[in-house]
Length: 297
Ligand SMILES: [Zn+2]
Image (cartoon, rainbow, N blue to C red):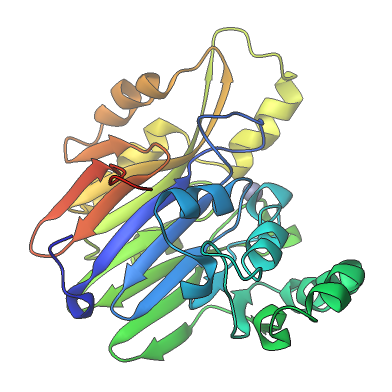
């Protein structure tokens, strides 16, 4: 990459899927490399494998942020945390891991070490105990990280009302910004917090033909997620330099390419349907491309 570390602002979709156990779309997880920091937002299934494909050891990750506690966003966490502690090239974590997330994050980070107590006891004879420590911080709508010009702000979204606390994140650096929607239905608060962003990564749901799910189930899903028509309105109002679909929740015979015509009813700006390992470089231009493995990885 042409960037010096200092100017680096790159977003990589580690997983663009949802609960269905697909091989081409792993669970939701996004890597944000910004300045000296390497943050992971959500830890869906397969995040460890995708990180390894990038050639980045988990030991290099400087913080994790959770948007909410639906299992498809966190089931990959124990894998990253424990596999990433092992002293091999893809792991080598030797420092405590900071984890930000909604209420419930402290409880999860206190109980995970109990669930894996045997592994931790045995492996701590080989690897530094500091590398498996978790430092949890519960968030509200505010700036949650502010260091070396890098600012991460959490904002509330609506993923089924108060029953399920859910947040999106905005990352600001060097006059540029990336916004990750988390899971949400159409949300005015997101539009407000995404104002002026370069990149808007947004979740989406669509149904096509006859879905196997019951109507009632689809209605519930529609109340918690965003349709492409709604996303088109969001993108049209935010006007990001690039909009990217992520966390594709497709039902029936809906296909990723079906998302575009519905979105285009209201939005004619730059738009990409995300795929695993799509990378977006944020700078004077905002450019996306699939990750190409270099020789040897
Ligand atoms: Zn969710």
